Length: 311
Image (cartoon, rainbow, N blue to C red; front, side, top):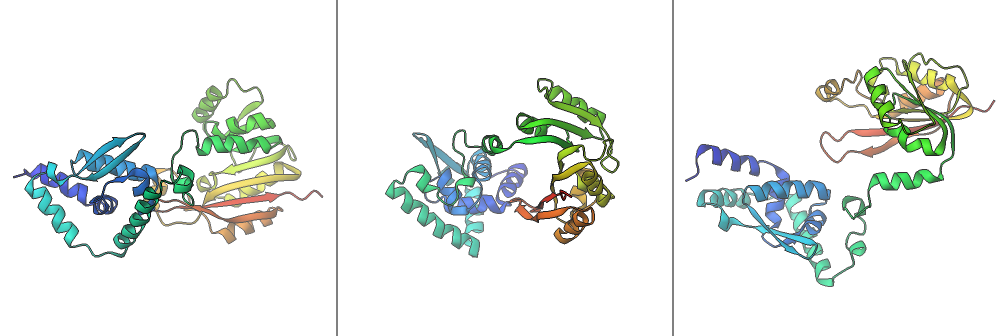
């Protein structure tokens, strides 16, 4: 008989809906790619939960070439664990699990037809890893199409954006209110000659009017109690015809998470943000929800592009 600690550990494993979904599928041996297709979940998330199920000795894996195949392994657990899983499984009657089963059948059919990898993951490529195919690599390639002039990165942090943009800009100026953060940026970018650093407040930029061809406000407005002032300042330092790129969270109600990241507001409504930019004198080319995170609490992101009129 398992002791109290073992019982609690098993209950913890079975308390997660993703792990229950995976176990319900693994009465047949499946690869990670097939489980990803069956559950419509990111590959990284499936792999993480498979590791936990394997640690709990509920599943076993088998290597075949470059692939790993997983299956339910109730023979390795005691009678109490088998009984507990049977109790959970037999009591399930859920539309999500039924959909998983249908997608599993499609995944197994694809296996039997031996499709090439691109064909197998068609329509879900962004959910699957392949060697060298990362968002960073893709972003660096696409940046090659850009030719920027003087760029101001407001709330630049430790210089990640500046490192990406510097090869495609005449100069990038990193501005942040934290001395420690700027020191980290200087260390990161010490080998990049066309980046400069400035400590300052986004609401009162220490720069002259018409100094920049582009201004970035990337994930900084959630740190502002006066976002309209920050947008007005970004507009002031833009040259006529210059562009503003803005990314921020859509309005949400997750106060605990906001406080954990020192946010002073809970994001914005698209319409309100667009009005702020227009009031600052910008011509708004785009202001819309651009993405939704796949993990709870499913934060949404607003992306906006605007331009200062040429005259």
